[in-house]
Length: 316
Ligand code: SF4
Ligand code: SF4
Image 1 (cartoon, rainbow, N blue to C red):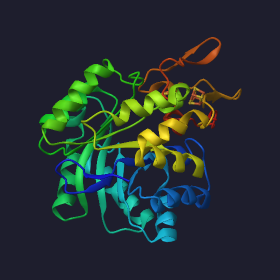
Image 2: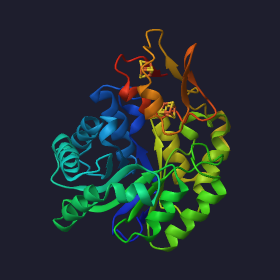
Image 3: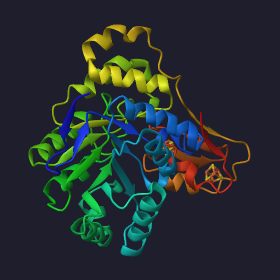
Image 4: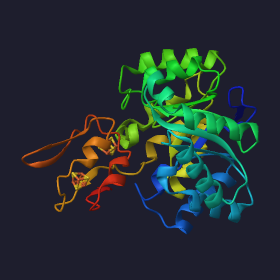
């Protein structure tokens, strides 16, 4: 496994990052032990970087994996907090559930532009205070927006950027992948740490798995790439790809990544509209026939299911 310094943070990470979303309740919903087993496999094979979020409910899986392996990985988490109180609550929850005194990276979740960054400034100031105390090592943001990458590049307070990055540009809300790459390059050259997300478009691009891997691993402006992994087989395949891309690509045609996921709406949907409002990809709408999913826009994140009051949205 290849490791590098994550921008100017002084944090060494593996080029492959374990994307924690997919094992949690918003997607595969593995039990604590099942999820921990998958994470532990990644850790034991050299992956030292885990991405999660307050929303994902995966701290317990990560904690158990650390107990099993005795390995303390680099952990990045995220929060939607915009004020000090919520920022404190979410960081405290992460530390308590992970059983740690400090966390490596804390991100402002789903930022869109300079304006949303300013709207979360009180929370950002709290994270920077924790950084001064050594409780957080680096602060940043995650985003599906080119405008947020451009803005983050010029804010000295923001050290880490976690942008959506896949060959089709799927999920980018305000432009093309080429434009996103230009923004990422500028941020990288400004010394920002960059780790990509959704290299397979949340699963939509699994039919061209090989091209997706070749694309994302060839970008010179990315320190690490978060890949969601739900099984031991996926962990072993992804680690093999990152250890020896050429050799692994030659055997890739025999590999069948997990069948395509899809978002499903159960018949008891009450048409309340909460999920429509929640989806920042604008992939959901309501009409007389009920809830409609635009599969061309949906990145299969599962975030919409977190706000459904009757648990009518499921990913499988
Ligand atoms: S519809 Fe749901 S799963 Fe699809 S992009 Fe929107 S929030 Fe994510
Ligand atoms: S949040 Fe749930 S109940 Fe409301 S419209 Fe969406 S799927 Fe239906």
